[in-house]
Image (cartoon, rainbow, N blue to C red; front, side):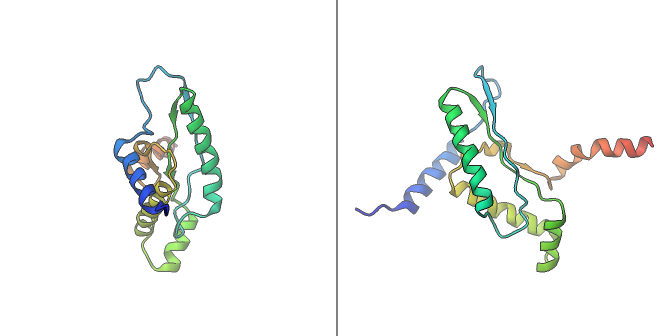
Length: 146
């Protein structure tokens, strides 16, 4: 009997996303564990082994903590501002926002295909105006105050 890994893995990954099984409970009495990894710069064409290695290690820890009864927060995000994205956009003659949106979608798809137990409701994207509005706010106050 042949193992149809693509069909089987896609089936379960879809189910995990639909049922949101890795969602962090905000009102839980369980002890808390926060597993944070470095967010990738989605300025290239996708993940590489330098991403998968630490993500797999923290995923193992997050899964173990869940089995031990912890309420685990294991978010994913994308740190997309900066020179790598700018250089990629210039090299490929594409607007940086377009590059970032496309590459974030590719990264998300690849991360989900790897089956990591991220809480996708807590996804962070530093290029989202709703995010950087608040991270840049203290800087604006300092500039006004001076």
